Length: 248
Ligand SMILES: *Cc1c(COP(=O)(O)O)cnc(C)c1O
Image (tube, rainbow, N blue to C red; front, side):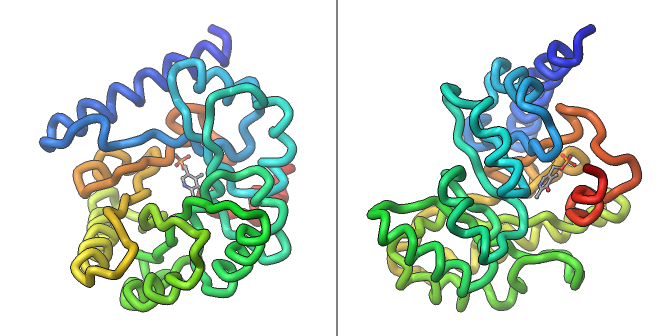
């Protein structure tokens, strides 16, 4: 079988798995969106997944958003940025991404807002929360979340859509559940604060290894790479961007 056909079928299979997971835990299937995590995936393979009905794609590097831009023209898709955002990439990321899921510093929010204001437009964002208490990952601490969200208020161009976490991956799958659940609890705490201008917040969590668990814990957007496109770099953790960069 052609690789693109395998990807198409796998995308359909994952969409069905999402649907069944929702029904099993009493949620409506349309509450959970599928985002294709497309780092290192060439455009023809991304197109195969889009042909199967996927609409959201997420890249970890601004460079990859740019490189694939021309090849993905004309598709009805929304591109998200899901990697660590460096301040020298703010200008470029705004050219390509319709949503940034990894806002984790006020300084970055401020820079995004300044550019967006100048361009007279807004942008969807998620705030990245580190729910695994590992120093190696990015994201704000759960305890800082309420203050952080309040501190975003002056940045009028940023539309807060929800919270994002990578969660604890390096463990028995059931050990991941507490970090997924924590994102939901942080969201609930924010909602209880009744902060002006903050509507219903979504939860971007769940990857190939913990997708169904994330749906059980309230995910509204799952980010799937390997389960659709196959393995990237055997033995390397998915968020290890240094390893990804060295492999090119
Ligand atoms: C790569 C990546 C994913 C997808 O991971 P898989 O295990 O391949 O499904 C999700 N989120 C982020 C931030 C990623 O970098």
